[in-house]
Amino acid sequence: MAKEKVITSNDVHLYYGDFEALKGIDLDFNKNEITALIGPSGCGKSTYLRTLNRMNDLIPGVKITGDIRLRGQDIYASSQDVVQLRKQVGMVFQQPNPFPFSIYDNVVYGLRLAGVKDRAVLDEAVETSLKQAAIWDEVKDKLHESALSLSGGQQQRVVIGRVLAVQPEVILMDEPTSALDPISSTQIENMLLELRGQYTIILVTHNMHQASRISDKTAFFLQGRLIEFAETKTIFLDPKEQETSDYISGRFG
Ligand SMILES: Nc1ncnc2c1ncn2[C@@H]1O[C@H](COP(=O)(O)OP(=O)(O)OP(=O)(O)O)[C@@H](O)[C@H]1O
Image 1 (cartoon, rainbow, N blue to C red):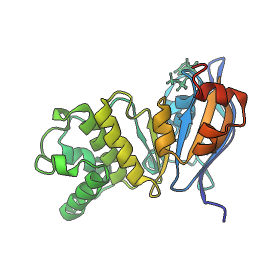
Image 2 (spheres, protein in one colour; image 1 turned 90 degrees about the vertical axis):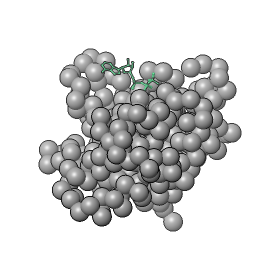
Image 3 (tube, helix red, strand yellow; image 1 turned 45 degrees about the vertical axis):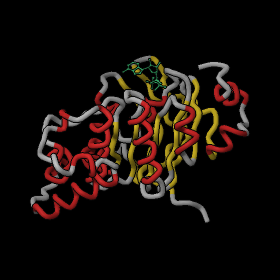
Image 4 (cartoon, rainbow, N blue to C red; image 1 turned 60 degrees about the vertical axis):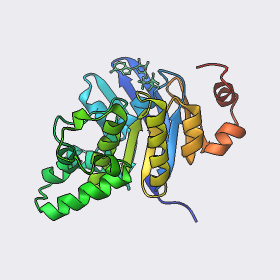
């Protein structure tokens, strides 16, 4: 049976001024799969990721053409509420970016914005989200301390908890572990393995081991083009394109 597609993108081109950073990307994402986006520096992975929740809208001089849909809805339609889109398609960045509030207030931030006031509902969301983000045991006794007092790896897991609390359909992750130490990175990878099958996750990574360990599918980008997209096992063990093979085997990039 065909899997349900959550995001579809067709013929996506993106220009920074005159520079064409994405040259016609066709890529779809199945519900509850983890897809890794890999490729050498500057190939357009982050640019493409940001088109999926319209983060590039904030950059002056950007022009985007093509078609990107979330459950069939054109996310670039003039009727699209961008704040709502970013709730449905949450984002985690390379540098942990907790707000300068308590851990609790970070996690409930989106729910409060949505008007949720019931303390029991907020408490429940904090516990559930922080458990999913694999940080509950470490912070449950200091929920009202500043999130900034945590280590980088703990901050990143609180940020992931904040994203999970609004129950997004899709989570975009732009090198979420590359600023962290190996132990923190492994904790986040293990957490992603737990979330696999429950969320649609799109992950930009430079770490081949991470891509092969946690993703279901892998997309290989090169110079603004999508070269190959397949099951992760196929990309790593039996790629069809020479460029993919060269990159995977470390011949460039
Ligand atoms: N705001 C911007 N203005 C102009 N050019 C940009 C901007 N952001 C990215 N670019 C250019 O677009 C191309 C793709 O960049 P992008 O950051 O998407 O690549 P990437 O594959 O994610 O790289 P990395 O792995 O180094 O993060 C690069 O040539 C980059 O210099």
